[in-house]
Length: 339
Image (cartoon, rainbow, N blue to C red):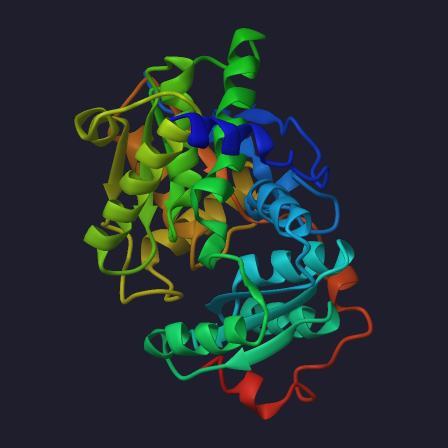
C-alpha cells in the first residue's frame, strides 16, 4: 500500500492542453415528457482538436515526458480520432509520434483524418488487420518507442475522465444541470466510460454509465470497461467491489450494426436530429451510435434526466489539413486502409 500511494504522489500532473469545464446544454427539442436530454460538450475541450482524447492525453503525455520519452507509438483504425489527437498534442509536446493503422470502411471523414495525421507529422505503419497490431506494436516498442495505449485507455488515461466526473459533479452543485440518472457515452477501448464510472462512484452520485458498444464482441468491451473502472476507482482511493462496478456501468450493444465504422439506420437518424436540434456533428463510428442510444433512453423514459456525453471534436478540420497531402497524393498504403 505504501508503494502504491507513493507512486500516486509521484505521478506528474496533467498537461494543460484543454479548456475546462466544458458546457452542458439541455436539448429541449429532443426531450420527452418525464425524461429530459442533456449534452456534455466535450467536443469543446480544445479549439483546434477537441473531443474526449484531450483529457486522457493530458495525463498520458505528461507521464511520457516525465519519463524522458522522445518517441511514442499507438494504434487505431484508419480514421482514429485517438491517433490524430495523439499526433497533434504529442508533436506539440516535442515527441515523435508513430501509429499502427488498421483498415476501416471508407468515408470522407476517415480520409480527412488520414490526411490530417500525415499533415501533423505522424509516422504511420499500416497493417492488414487488428490481429497484426500486437506484433507491429512490439516491433516499434523494441525500437525505443513508448506505448500510448489504444484509445488512451489505461488506468492513467482514465484519470482524465475521473477528473471529468468531478467537473460534472461541480456543475451539478452549481445548478448548471440536475444530477443525471443515466450518462450515455460511446464505448470502444473503455477508458472514458470507466473513468466516469469511477469518478461518479467517488462523488457518491447515483448516475449510472451506459457505454454504447461500437464494435463486437460486446462482452470484451464490457469486461474491459468494468476492469478499468474498478482499477481506476482503487487508484483514486475509492475501493469498489465487482458488484458495485456492475451496478455502476452497463453496456448497450444494440447499435453495433455490421461492425466497427459501419453506419446504421438509427445512427443516421440520430445524426440528423443532433444536427438540427443541437448543432452537433456526429460520426458513424462512435457518436452516432451513442446518440441513438441516448435518444432511445429518452423515448423509453429510462430515467428522468439523461446525459449524453459528446466525445467528437467539433473544431473544423481545415487547420489540421493545411500543408498536408490531398486524397490522391496520400501514399497508396494509406489510401488502401479506407476500403
